[in-house]
Picture 1 (cartoon, rainbow, N blue to C red):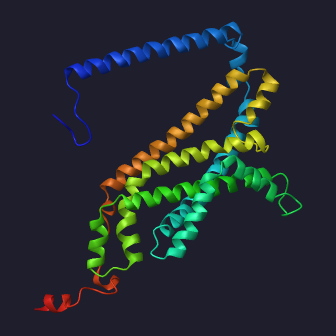
Picture 2: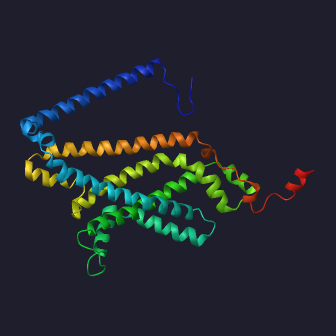
Length: 297
């Protein structure tokens, strides 16, 4: 018995998978026991390391919540700019004009090859008072956003290009057969169908954008969520506990983002848009010659 993508495991394979799963669980439990034992030996599991997150509201109102807000602001703004810019770049790479494909391709490959941290550092230098009149207190924020947009728009462009190229060639041929132009074919036929195929990769990239804001906090002084670890640890001497709490916040936020995207993907797959839109004759510039005559006959 087989499915579309793989052979359904038989009794022996199922038993083997259960054994592998059991071994993994045991090993994971041993690693966790070793880590907790090591933390206990160093006093990292003592109550005074963890109670500030419950008893002292200043940990949240002064450090964690403001840091989370800055992370979400930088991540959201980067997403809002990078998504449409990446879509345009991806469509540009599919252009019939060689000069458009070449120039867009050079842009995409250039910024995709440079580490995002280096782009943030270049952006911070660009926004220096000697070159641009950007306030010093907001310069780290804009440097982070600029670096994230430049890098992730290039990556999203490749996702869009791959998503469109993954569609059957017959979709384009059918659109040409009814007289649709390249732009009409792209925006009314190919893009609506490619969205569902691209969505998992796009969501993964959005999660990467959100996490990469921490790079700005590490080197540029951007007051994002992870950078608050230094201030909380200095006041409460609980570095490990703080890092655990911050990691849990990241997990919750990213889980919410992926859950929303999964629900959106399910709706798109059920929507008529996932199968492509049907255009009326008034939206087609060059209908098939003789089509109206034949219909009238």
